[in-house]
Image (cartoon, rainbow, N blue to C red):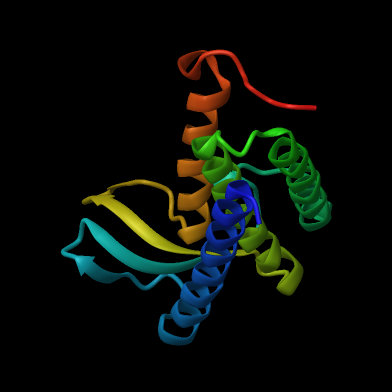
Amino acid sequence: MTSKTRWFWPLAIALLLTDCATKRAVESRLDVGVPRPVVGETVRFTLSYNRDAAMGIPVGGDSRRLVLSALSVAALIVLGVLYHRTRPADRLRVIGVALVAGGALGNLVDRVRSSAGVVDFIDVGVANVRFWTFNVADMGITIGAILLMLTLGRWGGAARTTG
């Protein structure tokens, strides 16, 4: 087992399982749209379903479920290529790919499982100024994307890939 494999699979699988478990727990304990304070009113759990893309951006009209599922599969293929081209020594890039892939899989599971959409429940803000509601998969995708920008973009120097 390479060091790349030792980082990628445990992280991607742990994120996927944590995302699925938290979503099922929230669905069984909360009513849609009813906030439950976690850290005062700043952090709340509020069950919602997002049938659209990230941050509720509408995509695909009536066929959005199929369109977004296909885009997720395409993204996972691109991430697979990036994973295979990444050197084992590029640990931050491997971690970034694992987090984005695990999160994309978590949200894809929701899209395939239910026409209601992706389960979101983490609600952050102050008074009426709220961030969009998100989930564990979204956190993984965001952190992973930042790591990928740092390792692939101009901040991380030249991209170092093999193949």
